Length: 256
Image (cartoon, rainbow, N blue to C red):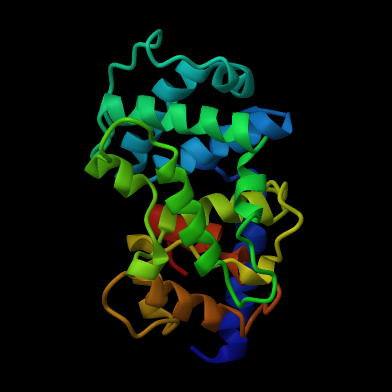
């Protein structure tokens, strides 16, 4: 596909999907809230659970959001894991992992005021993307786990791009927080959209190979950077604008 033709198709699908065609997608859950902290908390939790089948993701997020209720920020500030019964699992996450995740969030909001302020401590505006910032962020979140060894589920929650992980879920959360349109919230205005890296899952990897946005076979941080770099040829300031539509073309088995 020629470059001009690909540009037209990318822009067409971006416009076509950025209306009322959100479902099925984990971003449906933070869309239910109106206040900054409630959206940030719901978005973070929704991204952490965004792996597996979309049906499984939505089922787990419905259970989790029933627990955190209509005021996630108030829930987190008052959270006590001894008084909360969590009786579901999500693939690699045990009920204990989920309770610890909520405890991590409580410590973040007590100590830093928001996830954004913790992230910005290690944000480098001069860098080409958020690789190093994500690494610091993930490791700082894991460091908030107290008095217990890190389980495999907790380690999976917070991957490190410096170790090669594509960090799909973290990049998804950052896309929601940094970009602003009908889908994304744009709450973290201090960060440039040009520094975002596309969240790569099986759908994005497959369609990106077909469109020759990557020649790599293994999903990794390197693949995510390559796809993002090629998308910058079509929008240097906001390459991840195409993520939602490309992903949903794969989810819904549509033609590009």
